[in-house]
Length: 117
Image 1: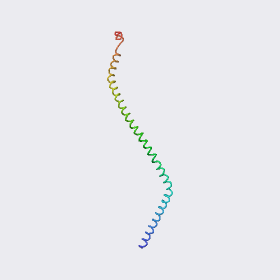
Image 2: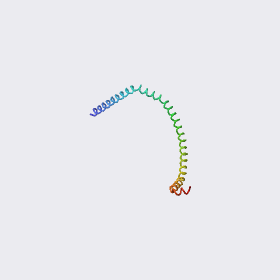
Image 3: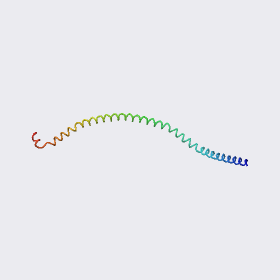
Image 4: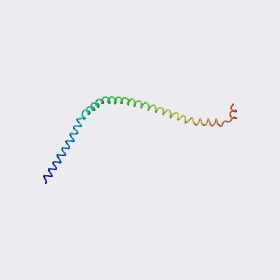
């Protein structure tokens, strides 16, 4: 009885090994079929590396130019804001005087104008 169990285990093990060998052989055949395709893709990728490297270098140059222009624009924007703030302060001072002058003008009547003449 023990020999039968051992024999069955051995047969099961051999069957599993045969199945695994079949799977491995199938995968090996598939890999062999794909080898030319893989070689082509590797070659294409190798050909793209210098192009990508060149494009990256160009992009870096553009990035540096944009960063330099950004710095100039930020400086100009700060200067414009300073001028606008200064103009707003002047306007804040001038507006009350203008409003008072307009009120005074509105309060004049025909008699006051004739008196000035």
